[in-house]
Image (cartoon, rainbow, N blue to C red; front, side, top):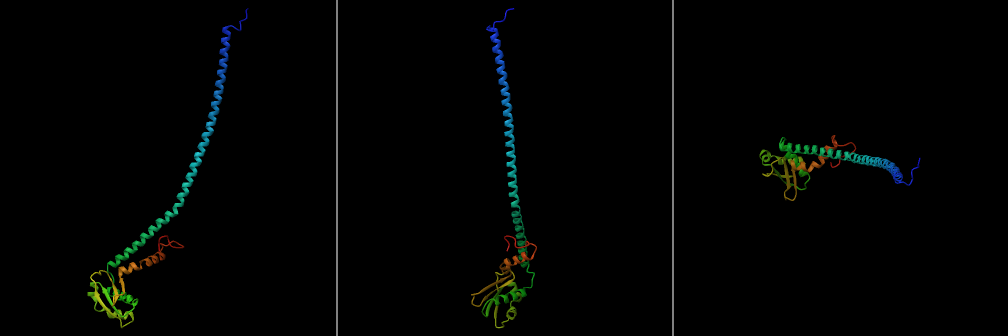
Length: 217
């Protein structure tokens, strides 16, 4: 039996094809290995990125949480201060309303406030201004009682009606007109209100234990 010629075209062609198949298989094997390696690296990288993202998100959430918690006491104090101010303003407005009702003894108010004003003003002659209604009711008889209340019988008080005055109280000026004491009720309230509101605040449950709330006083 004759041996095939190794140099024949058919044999050479078969060997070339076999070598090509082996090289192809090797390339495919390496490609699969490289792809698997790249996929594994990608998974590791993706997990690292995911964890970093989660950590960053958690850190940001914690930071924002701390900021929110830090603002809670400030906001609580602000709201409480606003509430206290609203309560105090309500008291102030109620005081104004009570004065506008004129539900008080006008004669006693005029005598008391006039005597108080004169007690702070040097001199012996004074002009007392009151509302037209009060003057019509008792203007002719208050001078003696006012002098008695001041403890100085020699005080000379002249009463007069002031059409511009519509509320209770008095305006007292000395005879020369150089000193004026506005003791009308609403003027007196506004003059004394800063100290009154402090007293109301301190003596009531509006005050925080250990001191005054911010903005009050």
